[in-house]
Length: 86
Image 1: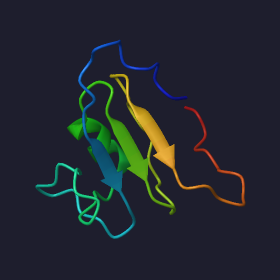
Image 2: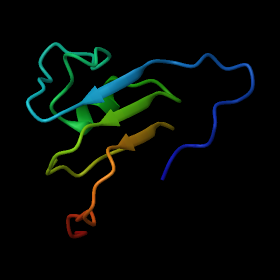
Image 3: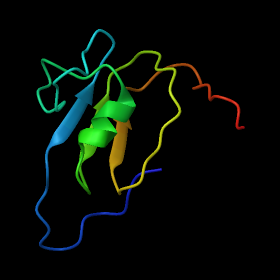
Image 4: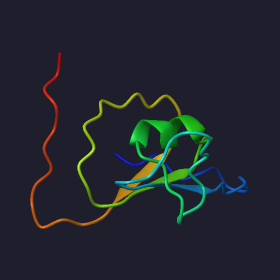
């Protein structure tokens, strides 16, 4: 679910990029040509109202999202799968 729009007059902050083959080490995820490897790391590097752009791929993660962020993914022809709840 996407976060609500930023309040009127709020500073629009950067996008963070995630892709297979990316690297989390020392990476703030803001360079689309040097993306992070994990969605969670991109979220952890985000500020409220940032957007995390996730490239097509498989990411075996359970996410903890404690700030309002927008997650954007590449469209796929198949249905996504989810990890079972504990």
